[in-house]
View: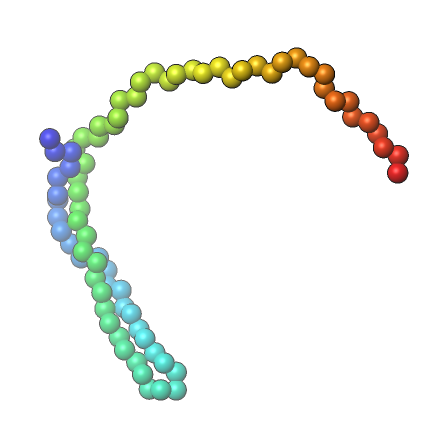
Length: 73
């Protein structure tokens, strides 16, 4: 069961790494090209979800709410 097909292998753009230490005449240049794989997606299958289970929260008991009292400073 294939969901994707490899279309091509390629190399990404070159990244240059340049190292330098000042006043030491130390300079190094190095390049790097990342390998890339191009894919073609044929089919996408997700996980089948069951119906969501509804859970009721326990209702708060009707009680006295504390009254707010203004405090004079």
